[in-house]
Image (cartoon, rainbow, N blue to C red; front, side):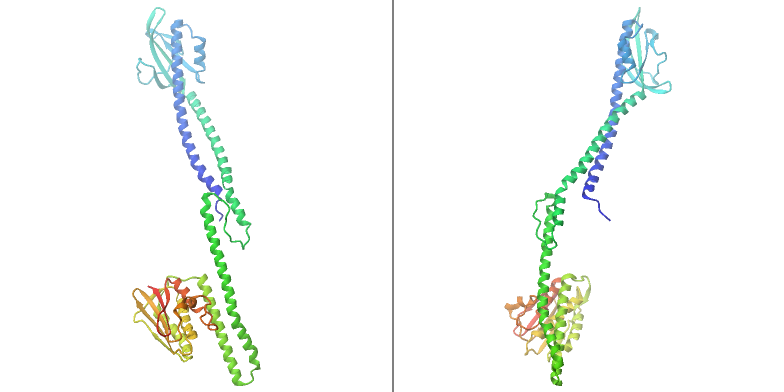
Length: 449
């Protein structure tokens, strides 16, 4: 499923709120237009009533002036109707039957009300004042009214103009946002083009100027490029070292295999066969160690699995016992009296224990007579010790012993055993250390529980 573009996201984020605001403003503008039209039309009714009252007083009820007639016929875009009564309620001029208020109104001030006239609602204004018509003096009442539909049409026209204006502004804003976002995102598009043009081998940092909003993204990309470059370099170095380490066992296997047919003497042939088997085992062990390193590098640890360290160590000792005893070396295992339950990957931990035992056999020297494996609890940690009485590792060469392909003496082993142990312990949040002893080597593995 393709995600929305950043341009569309910004467009949808900006426009809908503005559209809702425009709707609210449109409703408010319509109400304002209604109130404005009512006020304007009421004023026009009052102006018409005053003009009619003046003309009636001047002409003594005979006629309205042309200006007043124009005002009455076209005031505010709608026709005004009128009715005038003189002193004593005598009909003077205008329409014969004016609309009446449902409730009596006070004659002191102009009164506005809505009534029904010939089946449609009208807005009515009624005012009265003392005037003299002929020889009669008294209250003259002027009633003027106008259709409510005319007022509504005028208000609707005002609201429609405002709505059209707001719609035009919204359209203009939508175009500005749509194309403005495109222009604003141009630096990102340039950055994308620059990254696209890079070759697969170019993992250098991005140095082109970018907006401050994407500085964090570029910094993250640069950090990722640096990590990938470091991983590639480490991988290439590992392949180079592995190829170098595998070359000698492979050459030895080939040499022994080529000379084996020439060995006619049974004793010599048996010696060649034993040497060939030993070289094959060494090559297989080296290949397994290399695979273990790669597994540690790419697979990591299956955390969360609980297992008993003592039971695992006992199984490894049973598997390695025959090989150790065949070298005329005593092999002992002292288990902890209580289970030592730890979390992690038992396969990798077993590989680490196996490497320690094989490392002791390989580097213990001809005078080594005993290897001991022990499990115990020290405070909150589960501890495994591998002890031997062999040559030992000098304290000042401990770093070299734990380095990949690091060899204290040339021609002995591959230099991967202790390195694998260290990687396994790091991935289990544990530790490995060489304990200072007077004879041989003691390696201590500590696991958190």
